[in-house]
Image (cartoon, rainbow, N blue to C red; front, side):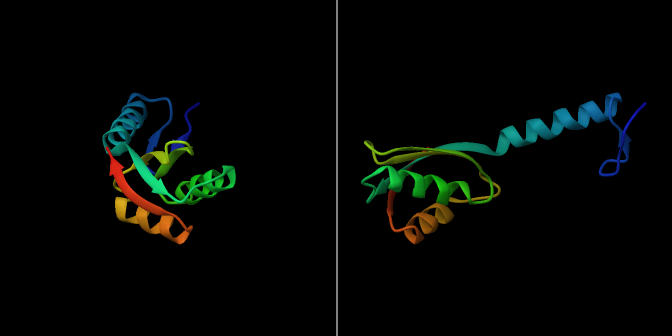
Length: 103
């Protein structure tokens, strides 16, 4: 009938379980952020793939969209799990330069 959740000691399908899930979603929304990183040194689609893969590998990064023409990467991330400093370091290690951040 109900599936027991060891994490919360409550059962799926009950009102308390649904409230806990709703609360967890609301907390996640509060810590989510979107920033646009300015990146120098990208010149081809391979560079786009490298930057997307590099940033996506960081903990807390939910999505990355790189725009080669603008030299930017739009990053959706959990600010409790990853910082601007970590973005800058990861991009540097990939061979590019983060020159600024918006958002």
